[in-house]
Amino acid sequence: MLWSDHVAGLEPYTPGEQAHIPDLLKLNTNENPYGPSPRAIEAMQAAVGDDMRLYPDPHGQELRQTIARHHRITPDQVFLGNGSDEILAHVFNALFLRGGRPLWLPDVTYSFYRTWCRLYDVPHRLIALADDFTLRVSDYTGEVDQEPSGIIFANPNAPTGCTLALDEIAAIAEARPDSAVVVDEAYVDFGAESAVPLIDRFENLVVIQTFSKSRSLAGLRVGYAMARPEIIQGLLRVKDSFNSYPLDRVALAGAQAAIEDEAWFDHTRQAVMDSRSRLSAGLQELGFDVLPSQTNFVFARHRREEAAIIARALRDRGILVRHFQAPRIGQYLRITVGTDEQCTRLCDTLRAILEA
Ligand SMILES: *Cc1c(COP(=O)(O)O)cnc(C)c1O
Image (tube, rainbow, N blue to C red):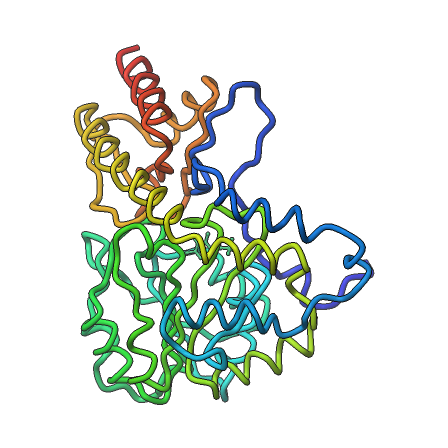
């Protein structure tokens, strides 16, 4: 075996299936059912040319400026990455390895966080969410013997869709001034409130967003973190020790145009939110308990039938949804909100399965 010592012990993340099935309806990886902004597509096409022989801007200055303007912060508070997954990996490396102090994270959240704990050997403590999958702020604010190196959670959370209010995030950041508090806002644009306005108040707060979900550019791989410049500089040191050019020319151009197209952004995310209400109601009618969601997916549990069996039956009929074989959530399905037409196909198919 020629692997480095730690490789056999890694627990790689399993991404949702990208299957090749005719007439497939993919509701398993929270992709946006609407395409990206037509202006973004045009900008990407225009970026492909003779300039491709040149390296891209290693700092993505123009995109950082545009993102900063959009969020009313400054460019030195913005860090870019090849998808937010890459940013998160750099965050684990840059912020969570401090003298053996543990990282705190919820027991039910984006499962990739535990994969990076393994990769970087980050000591961590899982903190159980309440029975209704809400995060109890008091679990994160009390006195402890050893301060955590950091705290990380998704808000809205994945795969539950539950959301913390801004004052609750502020309470956590305030209680743990010597810990990096990292809020993964992959889904925030579907109805939740962003913690970005808090970064000027809390030196320890890091907010991460992505172009993959609400901007419909999962294929482009662009994400960004926002925090005080001192934290951004730490991330830049790690990034420039790893890959100076994480964003290529096409990605920089496409992301730039996407964030400038506010109208497309607002129109498509509103359409997703409207379909989400209809989908939740449809699922409830079919005997599902549906958690309240401020994301582009719903987390639902059927009152009678096994989640794994339903997921398999859907797959046999060309519809993919996500089922996690994990403690506490094994009876739930995570279903991406599609167009109304797609949601109707899902509900009709579910009805046929449940009646059979
Ligand atoms: C989708 C998702 C990501 C990854 O986003 P990319 O920018 O596509 O890498 C990160 N965090 C959560 C919670 C997600 O659901």
